[in-house]
Length: 307
Image 1 (cartoon, rainbow, N blue to C red):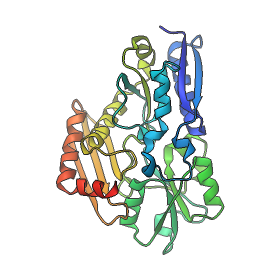
Image 2 (image 1 turned 90 degrees about the vertical axis):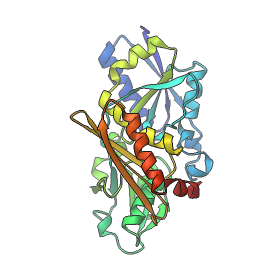
Image 3 (image 1 turned 135 degrees about the vertical axis):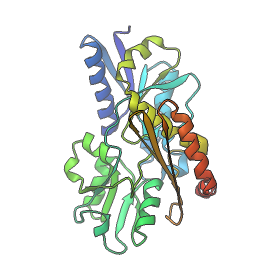
């Protein structure tokens, strides 16, 4: 087994937290004798902090450079937020390990208001997510959605500068960076169904690297992996990218997997919802079943209009 491992990571504070958490868990599993090196990279997504990612190729822009490091063997593993990982991976790479999921929900952050219900007419809500935007607009059509880009610190600074009445961020990201006190309230999954893979951290590596796979295997959380696999099967079936307004969230209970999903027009004028339940032994089929139902409800037309 290797005594030295190189971890490809973005340079953002949240990405570094994730890479360091993987490092901590690896040392917990294998002892402090394991040498770990962080390979810090700037991705195309990091360079487009003031623009909508949807017009430049989506959230896959956050992982391509890390994957190049794996393919060129300058890194052994890459650590990702699962909600940023495209469905199609490069040939010879795969995602064998997904850590136990943190809180998957969205957070309401404001210096003045306690929740979405408290916002006044035409209040400005910041988000970079079409998924969040469509659900908020459907439930609160009197609000205005304004694009919000940048890392977590930048987004909070824009809120504090008065550019927004409230912003919506992932609970997990805020908690990981020590900003739990900024969360005024948590959005229920009925109001904002989470993104596919939200709250989960994935580890990508080369398919033929048996030693590395053995090294990282103890970090895999079987339940989270099943849930995220079902969620990603929805997106794969609908051929939808990370930036399209698709939500998906799976939960396990007593050997059963319950999957909910949603596809919506960005302005909230139409939402298609579906859910299914089945044995946790076949998460992909459950995801495909939900996707097929969404198609019957008009998901293809919605997604085509968003491209």
